[in-house]
Length: 500
Ligand SMILES: [Zn+2]
Ligand SMILES: [Zn+2]
Image 1 (cartoon, rainbow, N blue to C red):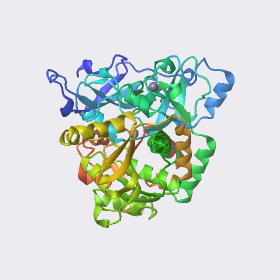
Image 2: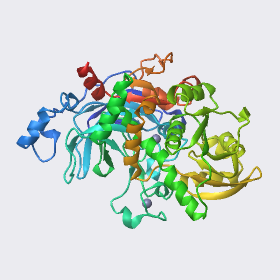
Image 3: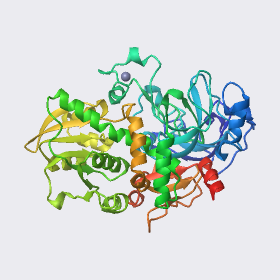
Image 4: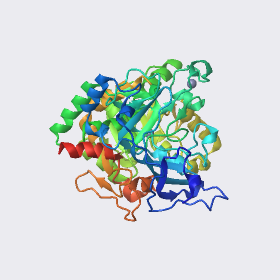
C-alpha cells in the first residue's frame, strides 16, 4: 500500500478506490489505490467519554451523555470517509475522532446527499474556488449533509452534543468583512465569483465522512419544531426514511430559495418589477430542478417542468409532485412563460429557454455550462452565460426577437438556510419523494430505489456505490430513474436499527 496516499493525520487507511482518469496527472502512474483490500489501522485510538464535549466532563454533561441517542455512543470515531487525492477517489477508514481546532465542531454525519457538482469537480468539469485545490489536493468531497454535534474545540458556544445540525458549505475567512471583493459583501453568491469563499468538498474537506470536522460558523441547527413536523409528516405516509435524513437537502433547497432575493435585486437594479404573471417553466427534473419547482409552487407560481430524459420528467411529475407540476416538452406548443429556470447545464437547455420565455420575461440560469458546450458555443455568448451564473449578474438580452432579463447565481445567502430548513419541514412529503435512491453506509455496494417498481443500481463489482456515482454520474440508464441519491451512514442505520 502506498502511504503517500494517506493524509498525514495517521488515522486514514485506504480500503477501496477508483482512479480519476480525467484528472490523472502525468508521472503519478505509480501511485495506485489498493483496491478491495482493507487495511488494519496502525493506531487504534480509543475514544473515551471525555471526547464527547469540550472542556472536560462536567457532572451534568456526564448525565446528558448517558441519555444521548445510541448514535452518539458506541465506537465513537470509527468509520469511513471518501477521499480524493492524486487523481484518485477512494474510501479510507477513519479511526479516532477528529480533533477539532479552536472554533471547530465535530459532527457525526447521519445522511449525506449526492450533488452533481461533487462529481463535476472530481471529473474536472468544474474548477474549485481556490487555485491550490487541483489534482494533488487531498480533500474529502461532499457538501450536503445533516448530522449531530459530538464534540467541539475551544471557543465554541451554543452547541451541545446531540444537537441536530445542517452544515453550510461556503467557508469565509475570519476577516471576510474587510477583505470581501464582492460589491455587496453579503456572504452570498457574489462572493463565489470573487473567490472570497472556499467550498467544502472541493477547496477544503467536505462531508462524505462518518465524522466531519467543520467550523462552528457553518452550522445551522434544525429546530425541534421543524424536526417534529417532519417526523409527523413522514410517519403519516409510512415513509421508510427518518426525519433527520431529509435535512441533508437543506443546502440545495437554500440554493433554490436564493433565486427570489436575486430576482428582487435584479428587478431593483433594472428598475423593473418582478415578472408580471406567475407561469414558470423549469428545465431539468433533477434535484435542483425539482427544488426550484417546489420553491416556485410555494410562492404561488404555476409550474411546468421538462427534462430531456422523459422518464425522469415523468418520475418528477407523477411520483414526486403527484401532479402538482405539469410535464412540458418543446413540442407541447405552450410557450410564453413569464420565467424559465434552467437547471440543465447545456447549450440546448439555454436555447429551449429562449424559445419558451415570453417577451419581457426572465430566464434564470441555475446552471453554468458543461465544458464541452462552453467550447461549442460562440465565445461572446458563453462569456455572458458563465459570468451571469458564476458571478451572479443580471443582464438584458435580445434573443429570438424577444427582450429578456437574464439572471443567475450559484450558492446561497446564509440567512436563507433557516428558510430552507423550514421549507423541508413544510414540504416533507415532497422532499421525501425527491429521494429516489439510498445507499447504506459509505461502503454500501448498491443504491436501492425507493420508487415503486424502481431499479436497483448495483454495479456488482464490490466497490462502494458512492464511488461509482461520483465517476458515472451521467450514466443515462441510472440518471433516468434518479432524482436524489442519499447515503445513510452507519450512525443513521444503527439508530434506525435500535428503533425497530
Ligand atoms: Zn449541491
Ligand atoms: Zn465576499
